[in-house]
Amino acid sequence: MTKGKEQKIRVLKVFLLVLVCVFLVAFASPNANVNSYHYKNMSIYERQDVSLVFESRDELDKYLLKFNDNDNTKTMIKDLERFDEEYFKENILVLVNASSTSSDVDYNITSVNLENEVLTICLTSKGPTRVSHDMTFWNIFIEYKKVELKETVVIKDGRNISYNK
Image (tube, rainbow, N blue to C red; front, side, top):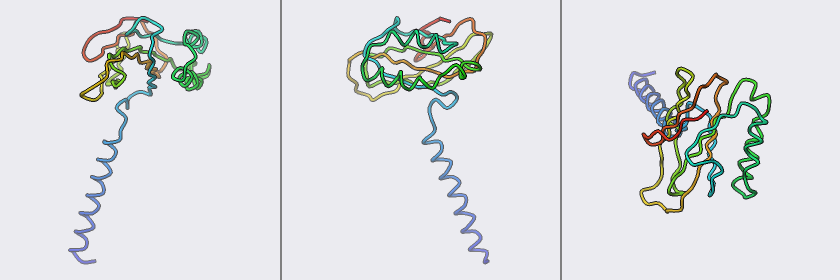
């Protein structure tokens, strides 16, 4: 193979590598460090901006009884069936109820950190520049390994919004 051809192949390989990296970054989940599930509801079943920790399927089922029978909650309840007793042997499920002045706004989980038995969850809002003003509540469920917790702290857009266990 000629030197010119080898150089073209090398340039093509570097280009493809860069392209793959750009593609991976562009389509990476903003919640990459945890598995989370976001459900939009038009009404709230706990006080707004609260966090709850479920350590068993039974606890989760009792909480889900509070929801009415609409399409949003049917989807959420169906999706949450995956969290059975086997899941809860080694994991917990953390719920963050986050309110928003607009249904156009969702939240990214920017970090989840455990220190001194305090689980800190940081959220940032995302949405278009112009939004509706129809007040929405998000139920954000976060998978986490089973740990001893004193409390959970949720920080939304730089503000502390809850201290709960």
